[in-house]
Image 1 (spheres, helix red, strand yellow):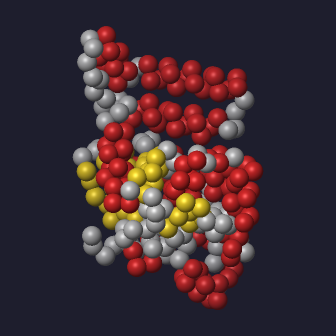
Image 2: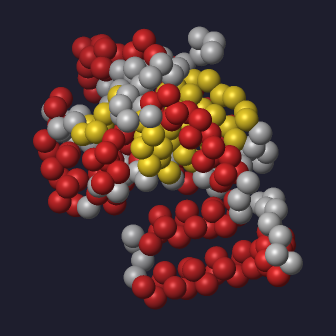
Image 3: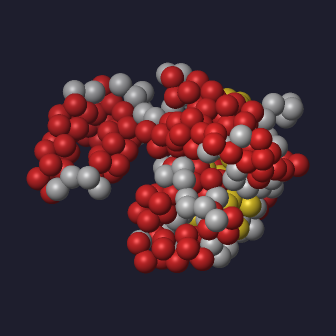
Length: 263
């Protein structure tokens, strides 16, 4: 892997986006945040990419904001030290959460602060046994950012989210699964392959349906039941006109495996 702070490779229809500052546990400095945003914009716009895998190099996922850089910003220009929240973190999280293709996070080692927020913005997560999570923000006198107040609460419930955010105590992979953050834990040396396999499975699936489902899930928190039912009906009507749906119905009747093309 080259010295770029974010590396992107292709494995068929899967784009693997790797945070690449292993010497800093993939902490997010300005160059890394800009590179990550650019990489996600590129893969989101690439029709040949049908699923995305987000991971970290060197045995860690992401240690959150690079605090050495942040301390320098506080000393040099404190009035603008937090511009990065809206200028960098918000667009990255929005890209992960809303792109019209599934995103998988393969998480090993450290996953704290904004790193945890990035993982939770993905659609699915595969965890290594050694993964260690934490919200971290209150430990340095801050409230959370990068959507964590929403994504963590939706994953674990309000009571536990309050505890995790206010106390900032670390927790492990098994706890993360038990609390609903992820569905599977694998040995550390298998997390990359498991993440790729899951992303490849999604890439071969009905990506148009995945995109509609992502929007319905995200918007369900803001709608009452009537609005949800209406939105589901509109989504079904759109998908009912796709070649994927028609082909899958014919494949079912013919007792053969469907082939999905995302159209």
